[in-house]
Image (tube, rainbow, N blue to C red; front, side):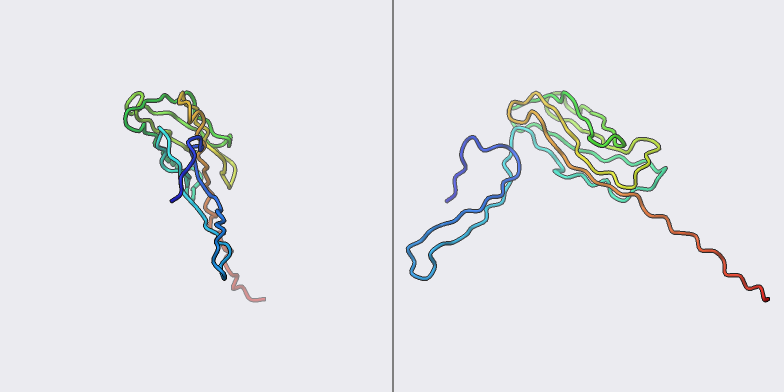
Length: 152
């Protein structure tokens, strides 16, 4: 049985555990523990794919934040670390459920959009929630020049 300490931080857990034994052939075993420590706020998705973008075409992706039972929270702010990506906070149920709409700004110029959405809350254990995002612009097909059939 594996027990986590009470002060374990909310987020991904990746640890290597080495178990020493008295077995004559197997003196130690290595076990890898992977998991997610959840808090009062459930965040979906943990990683936001903007997908393959087409310049001039609008796209909006959503991050959902929901309070666990018997808790409430407020979103104080949500910003993108990438200046060409904007965020908009939408209240679904005040104190319980919020959506962060994420989209490229009008007229964005970069071919790769990569960064974090940083969400500040009033929750003590999840004051800042980070959701990574990535998107890339579809490469347009290069127009081929017609082959000239003129004779010399």
